[in-house]
Length: 153
Image 1 (cartoon, rainbow, N blue to C red):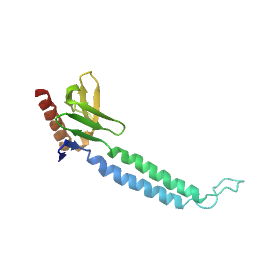
Image 2: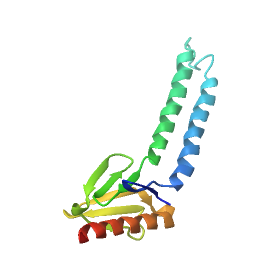
Image 3: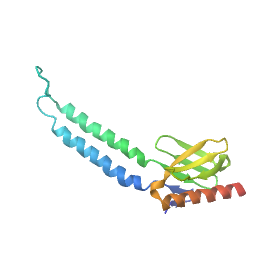
Image 4: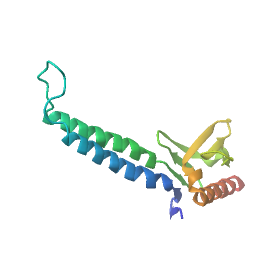
């Protein structure tokens, strides 16, 4: 079910979270474990270089950054009401009134839904992904109903 509030409906992708959250945690744990192995000589011949505490912390920091990068795929969201639609994708977002939206599309073999605009542009809606099946179809139908209602008024 979508999140329904006074401001309309909100959809977020579901299955990507099942993959992204454990993967992000796994990356952070993996890089932390690897950091404990960074001790002693760095392995260069004819060199006195050795791993220091800063190298271990850098490895943990790298794991945290990679984990946060993976979690960015949980960011997409679409919120819609009678006035318009707000789309937030992995990178960037759009705040559009229904007057500029020509159609809400979810074509066969498409990874996610799209908003077709009056100027022939398309805005991807990453929150409604094909892997979410019925949830995504419900979201597209709800957006289409809001779009139709706004054009009839």
